[in-house]
Image (cartoon, rainbow, N blue to C red; front, top):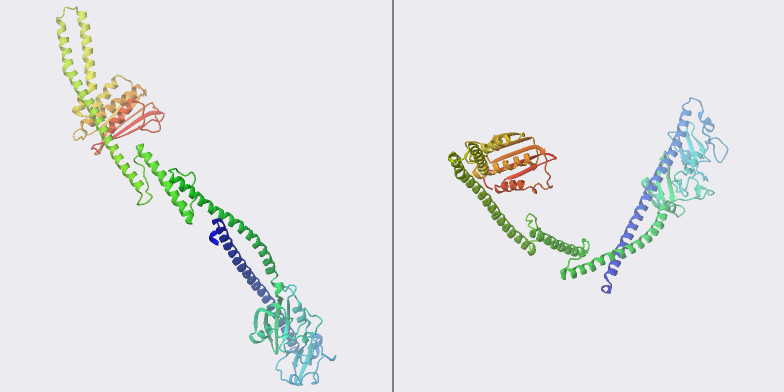
Length: 582
């Protein structure tokens, strides 16, 4: 029958049963713990009151005894005659102050040998209605008995501080008769009330104890009892309070707990219905997600993962969808040429992820191969340009130059006037000078013969003649054991040419610092000016100027590093080229 219920109803019943069970257990445990704590606190309070009462009774008797002993030591003859006035004692039932006759007191008590002055309880022997104490004064002539109703003891026991509305403290003699008046039966003679409760019996047997017992009225009370032994007096002093009054806070708490439990039960029902529906919703959502995945679509919403089976299903689906999305992103990055991205496999058996990783590796190898071919093509192009420049420089120097010189020498044989001949000589000299300059710029012979340091020095000296800009150059290249080959020398020279041209032509600098330093593993070129800075994008690898692009490409062909810094005023270029190929 339970299987016919919908999952929402099943979950509701399960949650409701569990919540009700927890509520009952918690309520019962809390109730009994609170009840036990309240009983312990009440017993502790009764114990304190009982101890105070017991100590008070003992102190009262002791104080009277000390007063009598003090009077006996006063040296006065027949001092005992002053006891009635000193202690307020009198003899009952007659009006005599003291008794030395045997008719009023039982012979066993009257003739007993008393060594010291002491109190005895004669309430039972003299059939007194209230507590009656006798002070026994042993003399040479016999024992003197002084009677007294100890009102101080009665007042002490009637003090109800800490005992509530139904609490009382009372004395019981060894004959199980009450010695102090009852709070509940004030008009009844105490000695007519017999008290054989569990507390009295235990006290005479074990001296003290506590617990919930029935008192002399037959009512359940919280009781603390102690045996009071003082001389020949053997009493039990009890301090008690009705269980109903003591546990009144527990009963109030129980009623409130029932109301709170009812409220919580309603809350549990509401929460159970809500949670059941919340659990059923992800199940339907998972069904929709699976159907969408089966159609090749990414689900718009995925249930949040949880710790149960449904949550595990949702977590697995979320992981699958996330993995597919990451695979798509990874494939898109590969398509865009980003081979640094990583792809995390869903598991060791992730076939799609492994296929994408393999494709990335193959494409990366292909791109690297293409980059190498492109680099080789650029290098060949640059090398071809430099070779062509060297050939043109040589042809101009060795071909056109001698021809112009020959023309100049044969100019004297032409039928021209001296002025015309001089003009032609000047033009030919200017052409020869220009050809030499062009030839030098195409490929300075000093570059091939003495390296980049000497070539850059000559270049700076030549440029300095035609500008007012101060140019400082430090050449720290190695002259004899230099590792700079022709490719590096030409590259450094072209960088120096382009950088000087930019600083003088565009930056309008009036001071330029240049240095060339050769280390064991690399060569460093540095140029800095104080001219106008250049504007470039945040990425320092993107430049708009063709000259800077050429410098960057030349450095890249030699696996070097190019750095450019321009902060508003001045520009600094640093180039580092390794002395071996990476």
